[in-house]
Amino acid sequence: MNVKSSFSKDFLDEIAKQLEEQRLKLENELGQFTKKSQHVADDFDTQFPEYGDKEDENAAEVAEYINNLPVEEGLEKTLRDVNKAMERIEKGTYGVCKYCGKAIEEKRLLARPTSSACVECKKTITQEL
Ligand SMILES: [Zn+2]
Image 1 (spheres, rainbow, N blue to C red):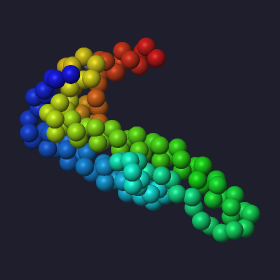
Image 2 (image 1 turned 135 degrees about the vertical axis):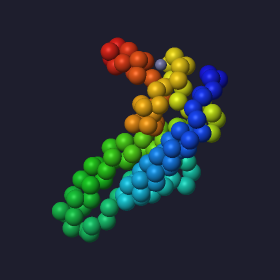
Image 3 (image 1 turned 90 degrees about the vertical axis):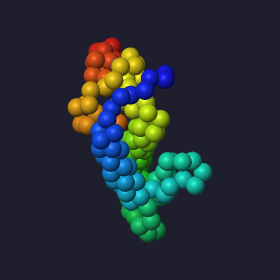
């Protein structure tokens, strides 16, 4: 889709600022228990914690690793959404609903800068599910 959005520069600057802050926060959170992949951009690998060699320590390591995996997945997904939104700003397609091609309300974008669908489409989809 080649629809260009028509938001003011001030608005897009504000959104870009929010996205940048969110990205730093996500990378910081991921950095506490993952290592950034050298091969794939924005891919993080949960690190196996090292508590010791006793049986209960090993069990705690496995438990923490298993707990961290879905957290990693969730943070990565949000980070990808943030990066995609930033790409859309660069390309000038930010704020355009990916389903109907109409502009998304500024209020919605300010509340959730990674939105890629307008309220109406989102509603329709949610009802269909
Ligand atoms: Zn829409």
